[in-house]
Image (cartoon, rainbow, N blue to C red; front, side, top):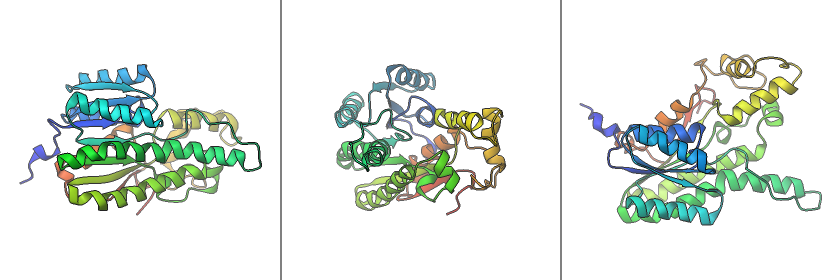
Length: 289
């Protein structure tokens, strides 16, 4: 018989980056509901504290750690403060991603704007996750166990449509998320003998602040969609209303932040103890691998 306690996280300590809203917040709450204490990172104090309050409401201890997780000093401080407070880190979820908060000024030559954009997306979607992982892994090696989940994207597993790339997602975003998936597989190889599982979750298109903004942009600026309700337009993605832009979603339902959180909670539980080096698609079947 399956032991239901294998899905519980009682006594475990998790660190979740970019957990102030959307997917990261849902992951932090999901881990707390499963029994884990959670160190909560977000860019701003308000969002960090709000998620920490939600973790406490779920019955678990929370440690709010606000700060820019793309900054190496903040990364080290966040990892060290979590470890000092709880005594260890059993679970790391790198959720940081999407568009950068700000970009450095482009250099004054023909390739300057392109280089600035790629550098910004690298910092936000790959470098931050790698550096946080490197900050936490020595502690996990010393413990002899650990679970790491990188939040990637369907964009890291397949090429998006030309219209999708023109309107909603720059090619650099997919390139960084693909690199994060590859980092996951190589890290799993290196850390497996140390008792550490490393996996990635690849969300589909989820109603977060980023996709709310995309939807509002679509109905405001694209002639075909002008005047539609932004939320209804978004729901049309899962319905298959725009096949020339978005791949077909067989389940015909949108993914929710809770769907992503459920996948993460499973991967960091003992129920997934023999799963490592995988990139799990949570996208309603949009990308088939």
